[in-house]
Length: 408
Picture (cartoon, helix red, strand yellow):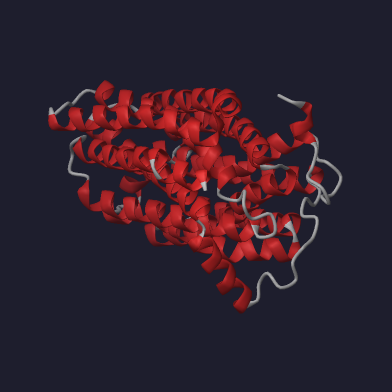
């Protein structure tokens, strides 16, 4: 990695060391897989213990994602007005409180409410992470640093289902949610201790209604923003199909133990890490559009395998795991480019751009969760067909909208 990547853009505060930036980004973005992946092995267990139906259980994920999306529209402008650090400290403090509430929940309704608050708080971390990348780096450099951070996220995602499965078997689902709370507190402590303010010039007008409306219109009409936001949302749609449906498919349909399910999810995380490592090299050789275009090949291949397995009536865990891993490898190529690309044209509105892109992503994920609550039928078909659908959309966007937008 070029040492120059640790140098901030002109007019920025003192440069943040590359290792500090990558570690902080990994922790902030890693809050998302911890909140979902660590929780997944305990999903069927808490559903049975709390006497919840499939739709109510899916709502613990869907409510979190919907609140996550809506809250980004609030945190983003606040981060542009007041800076990244105060928004992060407030959001992470709220996340810790909500996580403890989840541990103490006595019914599915209370758990849904606390998970929604958890999602709203988590939004501050993700919005500010993307904005920090734009504060410190130009687009190509930002994508390289983001790939480093997402490799760290992949390691967190790798450990999460393994720890979640072992914890769920040993001490139950409340112990899993206590682990989520502990990670949130550790991230809060890291930010309070190490992260300086990265926003060089806060915008006092960023939260005014007229400014928000104008900024939203500009973002919605910008072809680069639209292309990257749709790519990120669609590839995450496939990931969320796996996250929200895999525990029921692997454990309830295919008969895997929570620990074995954790291993299956860890295999997917390894594939994702591999994708981020390849992404870092391909960005230098092929640029952003070339990297996601090549990623689309893996993504579409994963979708074709998934649909083929569903139509063939496959009922073995390998029929799910193989397309899952191939899709996650492609996801590791798309995400660093998309996360950096979506804020690249907007150095003065990075928080707002990050927020709107995150809102679109969350709407997709919420729709996936609602659909799975109805579609899961005791077979592997809904998960595989859903994965195939999002794989096709992701590849199409990577091959059409992204190169056209960047060519202008």
